Every structure is written in C-alpha cells, then in structure tokens.
Amino acid sequence: MKMLVTGATGKFGTKVVETLLKTIPATQLAVSVRNPEKAEGLRARGVEVRQGDFDHPETLDSAFAGIDRLLIISADGDNETRIRQHTNAVSAAQRAGVSFIAYTSLANAGETTMFLAPPHVATEEAILKTGIPYSFLRNNWYLENEIPSIQGVLAGAPWVTSAGSGKVGWALQQDYAEAAAAVLAGEGHENTIYELSGKLLTQEELVSAIGTVLGKEVPVQQVDDVAYADIMKSAGLPDFLIPFLVGIQKGIRDGALEVESNDFEKLLGRPATPVSESLGQVVKGLIQGK
Image (cartoon, rainbow, N blue to C red):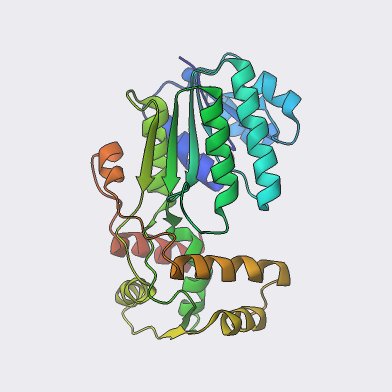
C-alpha cells in the first residue's frame, strides 16, 4: 500500500510526514511537492519524492500515479486560488484511481459562516462527487496562529481582539498532524468526518493561560472591528492582511469555531494536548528563537 502526502515540505506537512515515518516504512510513503529539492532530506531517508504543483494538473497525474491513500493538505492563498488548486488535486486523484482521500478541512465546514470556508466546502463537495472513500479532517484552529499576538505579549503589549466572547478549539499543529497521520495510515476511516478541536476557550481564557505560563498578568483589550483594524495597521501589518485578520475575529465572535468534539480522542487515544502545556511549548520556542 502506497501513501502520499501533498505539501509535505510545509510546516504542517512536515509534521505529518515525521509522524508517519515513526509508524510505517519509508518505502510505503511518497510526497508531492512543488520544489523537490526542498525534500532531498526525505529522499535520503527512503521516501519517494514526486514533483506536483496544484496549479499544473499535468504534474499531479504523475505525482499521484500508483497511490492508494492520499492526504491533500489544503493550500495557502485566497479563496478563488484555493478552490482552483484543490479541485485540480481532487480531479487528478480520480484520474489516478486513488482509493482513499483524506483532506484537511475547516471546523464545521458544511455550515460555518467563517469567510475561509468556501474552499473547504468546494473541496469536500468535489471529493464527494468522485465517489472515492474519504475522510474530512475538519481542523479547528492552530495554536501557532496566535504566535504574533504571543510575541506582542512577550514584548509588553496587551492582547488585542475583537472576537468578543466567541470560543475557539485551539490545538497544536502537532496534534492535528498526528490525527491526519492516524487516518492516512489507519483502517476504518472510510467516509468519515472528524471535527478536530481542543478544549473550547474564549480569548480571556486563553490569555489567562498565557499569563500563567509567563508568570504575569496579561491585559486583554476587547475592541470593535474598526479599532482592531486600526491597531493592526499601526502595528505595521500590511494592508492586504488586515481584512483577513478582521474576518477571522468576526468569525470567532460569531461562533464559527465553537465546535465541541472528542474526535481527537477517537484518533489519538487522548485529547488534544492541554492548552497550558501547548502554550508552554510555544512560549519556550519563541524565547529560544525557534
């Protein structure tokens, strides 16, 4: 049985591959990457490295050839770009005769109001139309997404948010990666949807945990979206990024990530790493410059 992971040199893909290599022989694993030279380290360990670019479907035909189980890791970019790229990948998987597709989706993708949802909805629908057995890994929110705000806190800034009392199921990328690896290499995951979420917390609850890790009280500044955008702009963030960040805050405020689930336990035999422990890892990495 041959498995393939797309985007395997990205931060998330790297964690998935490293997790898989702890449980399966390297000869059973292939990766599809835009730049094969970035994956030379994997090739040296016996992993088959294939060139595949979601913007060039012809490269995906050879990348996915002979693959039994495929993990499509969602790409970066605007919604339109992602829909096109993901659709290309799904079509290539169908042409290649792949027998199982796992896909990293978004929390509550079918019903969420989060502005990031359209590519995930379109990709899930495209996979369903193929008739290929699937598993949708609906990832809630990476704790690592909050690193810029945590860096601000370390520098003495308050925690600024317009997310109100909305709750988020933060978890480490490593937890999500281990869940993806468990589905790709495991059995009995055909035609499943996993809502992968850590313990639901408000901004204040997360910041309280950060304060505990740092041994100091961290003030939370709740503002409206306009003020949040102004503060982000004054902090030096590029203009194109600000509507994206405001949209995330609004989605959280509206409850888009408030999805309670014990699916991590189903896949990993344990809940997501407790947020206090996860934050300790993140803060330690920032202090050590990792």
